[in-house]
Every structure is written in structure tokens, then in C-alpha cells.
Length: 545
Ligand SMILES: Nc1ncnc2c1ncn2[C@@H]1O[C@H](COP(=O)(O)OP(=O)(O)OP(=O)(O)O)[C@@H](O)[C@H]1O
Ligand SMILES: CCCCCCCCCCCCC/C=C/[C@@H](O)[C@H](CO)NC(=O)CCCCC
Ligand SMILES: [Ca+2]
Image 1: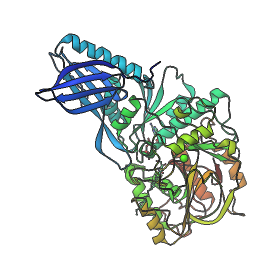
Image 2 (image 1 turned 90 degrees about the vertical axis):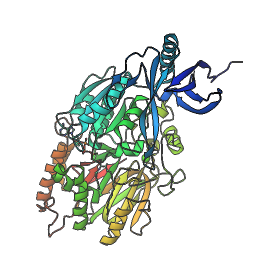
Image 3 (image 1 turned 30 degrees about the vertical axis):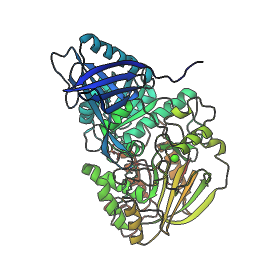
Image 4 (image 1 turned 60 degrees about the vertical axis):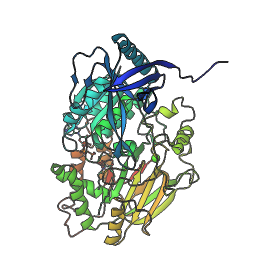
């Protein structure tokens, strides 16, 4: 009989940790050490999975805040591993670098431990990255990206034997263009240090490059795109850090670095946004019209405030008390599988997402290892009946994930799934100011923001938005924007500043010179803008899937 899954003890010996004696054992999957009392009886045991061991060093070594090695240490070795801290959010725990110094009775035994631990690490951590391409946005969030990387992350990568090539960006879209055009041979993954904006650059680079190599056009909305092999890691250093927070559960650079080192991965739904037959952008978090579009447009004028700009702009936009007319069409997802109000929380290993991945990519051998897979219930994309809603809206939001962030720990749609191939469409119809304030305020607590008479939420596969008949986007303007805003057209993509300029021009074209000027205009604008993961879209009429 062949025995599978045996976990033989490779090494067991009596070691010292400080002044206490321990029995340490290394099996294939775990490193355990048990304190022994004077009569050799077991006291408490610490057990660390080998897959969570970060590194092993000879001697008494310290890594954070600074690397230091003590002398006279030929019988000692230090093991570094993931340590789950008791603090964090209700949704995810902070991870810290655990460190234990062992002292062996002889140098020989120390060498045996070092060798066996390194072999175990190699054998039991096949998905760890060895070489990473890191992009730092020096202007994201509180402008701490460089410092966060060099003081908290680089020492951990070094300890784990990961070599990294670092690019500090000098302009917007540099990271995206690098991924689209440069030789990426030898890199196991790309990492961004910044916020959701630089993550979005990496996302567009990785998806774009994969389609280029597969010879597929991203502009064709009916095409099933190739899913991406290159993983994206995020070291949070932005203003909202929504993608990091919603996937890891906290926005903490050390936690994220440790997840990257041990090769954790999480597939993500990606929503494509098209205007007519051009791809405009991809989104993983929020595609939002009305309140969230206006907050973003307003906040771009106050970038100097840093992350506070969203609070200030949120208050200003709330006070401007706006609603917008439009026609929303959506294709509902299968309500038997899940619902936005079923009170579930999607975490790594979620069963709804696993079933979704199998359903969406039945022939993919690495279905569970997909990272940035394209939003794709495509075989059934045109199936089902489109539903149409016309009216005036405070906010129309489509979110592919919960979009939780420090500002809203449960997010825009707390029960949304990270990788089920659907998004949640939240429709907030026009209402009185106090009602809307209640809706917003509930995002900051555990109260149900959907339990309000003017709010509807639907789990969807696709959404289209258009202006009411007679108010469609101007045709000439359309033509100009199609040429201007195609995401894949070199040098003509809407950047933050580009979009802002566009928005001002558009406001002026429509006689709304003061659209962005203090929100104090007497004549309220008739159209808002779309916020797509923190970027302003250059079109009002869009289709998302
Ligand atoms: N060197 C650079 N100079 C100017 N802009 C840059 C540079 N590098 C990246 N960018 C752009 O800066 C924008 C904001 O970056 P990022 O997302 O990192 O920070 P943030 O806006 O503070 O955070 P969040 O998106 O989480 O709110 C992105 O659109 C990105 O494309
Ligand atoms: C009375 C109290 C009112 C409090 C209101 C709190 C509402 C918080 C909801 C937070 C939703 C975040 C959605 C995430 C969007 C990100 O993809 C995007 C890119 O980072 N961020 C923004 O657009 C930044 C947009 C920030 C909007 C506030
Ligand atoms: Ca989803």
C-alpha cells in the first residue's frame, strides 16, 4: 500500500530558547517547539506551518526595525515566521514578523537544523515568488511610499530571499506602460506601493499585456479575454487602499509583504467598462455615478490635502444636494447562487467564489490560482432578461467586491464576492437630504445601508447606463471622446489630470463653468461623471460587464 500525505519527523532535538528548554521538531509541514519543565513534561507548544516560515538565519539575527547580527553565535539560529497579531479589523488580522532564536548543544546540530529547515521551505512553498518587479508611487497617499517600501518591506523580501527590481515612478501611467512594453522575463509577479490608482495601472498593464500576447482585442465587449498568470501584489500606501483592504482585511504594509512572500493569492473579478465599441477602463472596485463621481471630481482640486480631500469633498458634495436623471439597465445574476443581502462575508477560500471560478473557467487547469481573471460569466452573459430602471438618482454604484476600506470597514456592499463573476449594483433614488445622509452614515457602521426605502441592490452580470431620451451625450462630443479616451491608445489615455481637464471643458461646453468651482452654482448640472476606481471616466453612457 502506498502511503500518501505522511508527515515524517525530519528532525527532533532538545534546544534552548533563552533560558528555557524546548523539544523542537521539524516535520514536513510544521515546525513545533514545546517547552519542557524540570521533569521533562510538556508545557505549551508553538506550532508554525513551514509554509509560513519567512526565513532562517545563522546566529542571533534581528531584521526590523534594522538588521543586526550578534557575535559568538555558532550554536544558534533564528527562525522568522508569520505571527498573527490579536489586533486588526473585524475582517482581517494584522500579520507581524515572528522571530525565535534557538540555541543548539553543538554547531553540527545547528547546521543540521539550518539545512533541514531550508529543504523543508523549498519543498513546501512552491508558489513563493523569487523575483519581483516593484513600482513605487512616491506621490500616493501621504507620500510615504518610498519610505514604507525601504524600511518595512525590502528587509522582509531580502530575508525571504526575494530579489526585487524597484522602479520609483516619475509620471502617471509609467508603471502600466512598463508592464505593457518591457521585457518581463524572470519576474514572478509585479508589486505596487501606493493606492488604488497605481494598482489600477498594474491591472491595466497585466490585462493588456496578456491580451496582446494572446492576439485578442480588448475593445470587443463580446470577447472572452485571456486570464492573467502574472500576480499583482499591493503594498498599501494610498489614500483609500480599497483593493488591499477588501482582499487582505487590513491596510498594513507588513501584513501585505508577508502575504506576498508566502505566495498567497486571491482571484479577483474585473469589470470592463466600454463606451460603444471602445474599451474605456477596467474596474475591480467602484464604478459610480452621482455622489461618488462628484466627490472624486471635487477632490481632484484638493489633492494637496492628501487623504483628507475625500472627507472635505464628500461634505461639499453632500451639501450641494444633487441628483441626476438616467436610465439604468442591468442583467441580473443567478439569485439561487447568492444575493447581496444574504449577510455572507467573502474571504479567501470562499465557496461561492470557488464554484463561480469552476463555472466561469471550466477548462482552466489552474482555476483556483487565477489572480486577475477578467469578469466573465461570458457563456451566459447574454442570457437572462435585462431590467430597466429610469428615474433620478443620488448615486448609481457598481462594485465587483465589497469595496471595504478604512472609511467604510464593511464596504459599499458588505456581502459582495471577490471572485464570483458578478458585481453588486446599488441604486440610490432621489430622496430628501436626511435620508441620503442616513444612507451614507450607515457605511461607517454595521447598520444595513440597503434597508432604506429609496435604495435597491441587485447582484448583476452586466450594467448599461444612458441619459434619458433627448438628453443623450452630444454626438460630436462623442466622436471626439472616442478618439480621445480609448484606454489602449498610446498617449491619449485619460489620466487624472487629463480627465480633470476634460471635465472642466465638458462643464464649460454645457454652460456649467462652475461644475467644479466650489459647488455653489445656482444652476445645478444635469449630468455627473463616472468614478471608476478613483479615475474620472470621459463618458457618461457606458456599458459594464
Ligand atoms: N510619479 C507619479 N507622478 C504623478 N502621478 C503618479 C505617479 N505615479 C503614479 N501616479 C498616479 O497617481 C495616482 C494616484 O496614485 P495612488 O493610487 O497611488 O494614490 P492615492 O490616490 O493617494 O490613493 P487611492 O487611489 O488609494 O485613493 C494614480 O492615478 C497613478 O496613476
Ligand atoms: C456622515 C458620514 C458620511 C460618511 C460617508 C462614508 C462613505 C464611505 C464609502 C466609501 C466607499 C469607498 C469606495 C471606494 C472607491 C475606490 O475605488 C476609489 C479609489 O480609491 N476611491 C474613491 O473614489 C474615493 C471616494 C471616497 C468617497 C467618500
Ligand atoms: Ca464579485
